[in-house]
Amino acid sequence: MLNLKPVKLLPVREQAAASIREAIITQNIKPGEVLTLEATANALGISATPVREAFQILARDGLIELAQNRGAVVLGMTEENIRYHFEIRTALEAEACRLACEKKADLTEIEHCMTHSAAALTETGNYSDYNQSFHYNIWLASGNPRLVNMLSELWNGLSMGLRTTRSQYAKKSQSEHEKIFEKLRAYDSEGAALEMRKHIIRSMNDILTRYEK
Image (cartoon, rainbow, N blue to C red; front, side, top):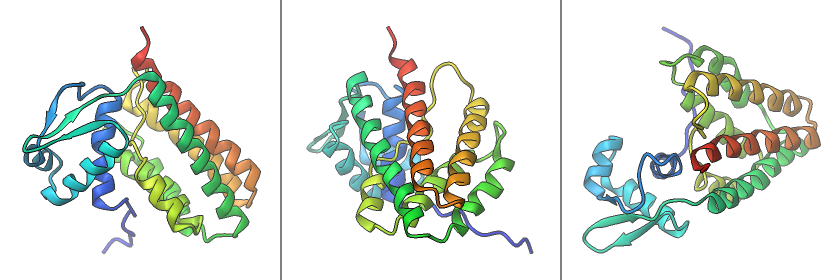
């Protein structure tokens, strides 16, 4: 039997919200499209309940508009709103790093992600799960459940731009994760926060390549 630990991921409703948000941000779902509970649940392979909850999260963020008896209408994203979204994530994720260091948090789960994510650096590898788990475990290490809830509802998956392949993106992300983890392991709060800010801002700039005129 393989001695492997499961990857710790976001709760199902946040995963659903993240998948839909990623598709909207990357313009794979266009403004004006109608999302129904049943079709979205089937596409994600989950029940309708977490999708309904995900719709509520996305409606609050202004990405969709709930339509009675129709599911939801996609409102889309603007370059300005993407900047707002990533600015908030930058501030909160940097603070999660800072708190994890200040509290001398147990970094075992984060190290587990780092150990196994390198093996997922292929087109067919499941790097997305390790990427999500890396961030999620840093939030948990902050020891602040409200911060965890806020960041969980902001998660947007891989911030893929137009000028990179999935494999190239994963390698770049992994390299940045290693720098963040190096600072976390040293409990360098300022260094970890700085590396996380650089990581999120780079992700934002990648996404913005999709919105260039």
